[in-house]
Image 1 (cartoon, rainbow, N blue to C red):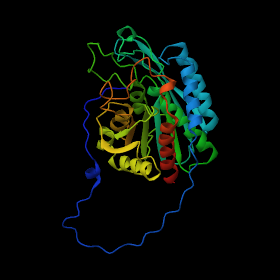
Image 2 (cartoon, rainbow, N blue to C red):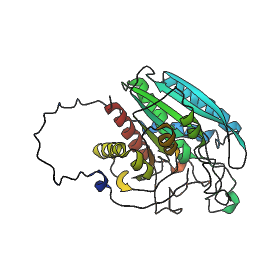
Image 3 (tube, rainbow, N blue to C red):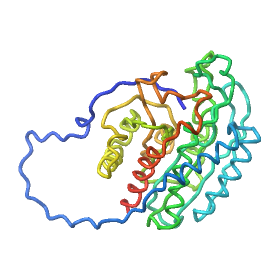
Image 4 (cartoon, rainbow, N blue to C red):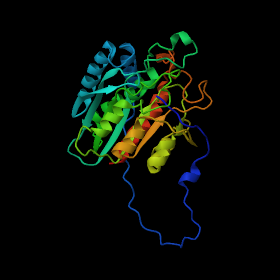
Length: 332
């Protein structure tokens, strides 16, 4: 991704604060103490290896040989961990009229349980390095180690953890395709139409299970850069403020407050927007937002040929992965 509408920063404690003025005193209720849940330790070395494997295929641009080969590997690997895994094939048209052969890759844990959580990321990579400082690279496909690969790597490792310790509820993991095939920076169609998130748009209208619903969803996008900071994305706060609060408080409680910052970021037209608006599943986006980066939006190497493995930090993968699986296990 992506298309960013606006970035502004402000403390967001006020968004979650309750107005106590005028309230009558109430009797304190006895609360049943929560049972402490043992959460496995997220393996960042393993997540890093899953990213490295994706990058080894080359840029995963739809319709390419690398895209086909990586899709086959992803569904096989996800199938090793989940109860069932499959490819949702579809055709969609890109901004320039190109017909893309899309492949959403879906893995399901505990299909018989109605209480479900959706975890997702996109696995395709950008065909245009249109933010590269060298204009000669603007029509070069990117490796997408962070933008695409990192979210998938974290979720593959989460799936491995779930396979070893049942989360006790339904979990659906989806790797969306054709997310990053939007118009390049110099295109006349830039800013027009819903050309981003094509795979999530398709799935939201055609879910893998009829009348599919989840209690909430978490989207991971660009979650691997060294020293990343995750601000609270605008549409996430609009559609699912309670779940944003839950995830950020969890991250801070388990020691990752230097990554998950209580500040609001911009509104990002990412996959979660379509899940919220079409499927009505409250879904948040954990995404690296940095208004101080060279492109004034995302991490420094966003949509450049330098989005490579050396930019990935294992401590960041640990922070995101441990937070996500902790939220899932504590939902039981």
